[in-house]
Length: 173
Image 1 (cartoon, rainbow, N blue to C red):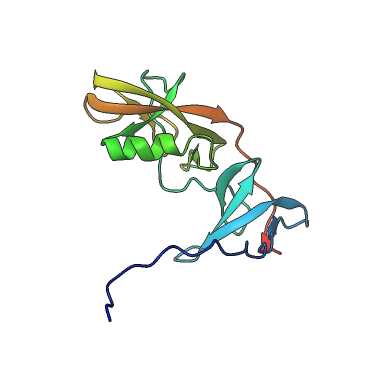
Image 2: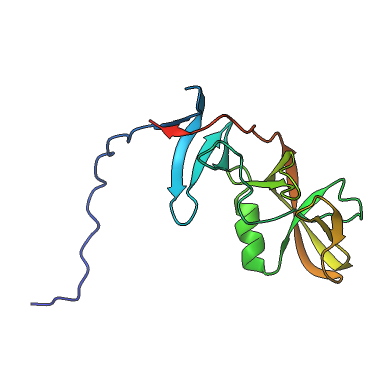
């Protein structure tokens, strides 16, 4: 008897049942989008798919820019083409692999008040940057230098319409 041998692969099993397609509704009962998940730690955040993109909302209905910050720009007015910096080949592969998928980057000014939301989707377009000064939008919406000259890969972003803030509270059902 031998215990460490692998046999032939068995046949493919049947397709499982489709899970529930939960919707996120705003405080008026209007459907915002499809429920993707929730981040329950600290202040709960809802992940919602809207028009093919995944966005983060607070329970009160505000579109929330989840921790990525601002995209990078090559000009000191933070206009024109937007990029994400990829400091390693693996990061560049991860970002370009998100192209065509639901991943979205959202920026909005948070100080002194909440500003309008801007959103982008990832593309497969990359650019090798050598000693390029990059700029980003800070929490007050001002365009500021992002450290010293950047060397590495830039992944181009394509602008998309950001979904609106909605009246809360949001519900799932």
